[in-house]
Image 1 (tube, rainbow, N blue to C red):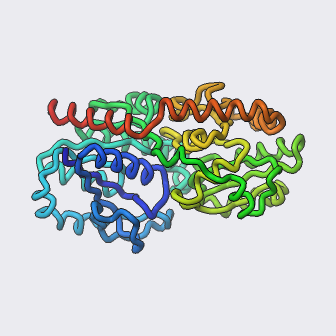
Image 2: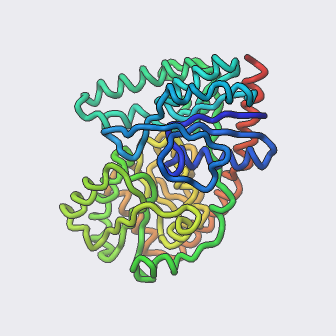
Image 3: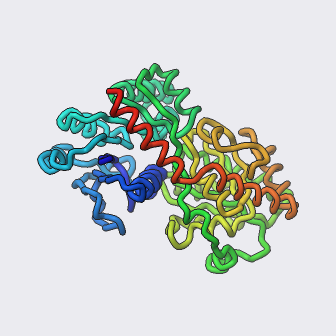
Length: 385
């Protein structure tokens, strides 16, 4: 097949959408399919530009990490896009990419599918704080319903996310296709060297969060939870790997909670050179987001045999199974801290759960299987419309 992806984000902008696109594209290309991507220009070249059409973009005042593509400039490529004779268009984000994808699908006379990557109901009010939370949620639901019903088919990263969309009134054809783990997620890494590089003692109990440092990730809960944890394990360290708009707030909260000796913010890590070692260096991976449509970082941690303590909410429900590499905690900082302590204080239990985590991720979450499911869905869409 010949497939055109369109997204408002892609590397060097690091987030789950970028990771998902790269994961699916690599597998689809390996399977013999042709995939092209329309994405914003960031002024920085990435390693795999040959299949990407970069569009000039402007900054967004409330989220400087992101860019908005110039719609008219993108449409100027219509003649060259028509020559490609695409079989299907796949939209990955709901901003300029959504409307551009719809327009191109009409002009090129091909079906259009869209992945609902982000739970905007729990996201929008963080970035438009001048709108009351209840109104922001209502707006997010209305926009999501309208956009999802405008395309030929929807891809949801998890069944709970698809259930939410159906509750919104989304009627479009739909399929659940999660993002799988790339082979390099299972590659052996040197956690000891990672600790040495960042000045973390080899025997210091260490928890880890990896992800965008954004308000919707509920990282403040982890800091509050860590206060309870260090009552039992005073030298426990929480490492936060990532960057984002909540950084200043979390640094302030860390100081307010007197956690400055128990928390380390280390920024973004290179996925190809450092991320695996970061996961491998941790004794436990902690995650408290309530708005994930999937939660790929949980699986990445498991692929490095790092046990997980997390809240099973929305998309993470489709990943987390008690005892299969994870302990599931409620949204209660005391109980969550107790579960983390149970692992930090018992190496045998921690090692057993880490081994189970690796086996679970390897057996059920490879990228090849998910890419095959996506291609099958494309075929179904193109033959039924």
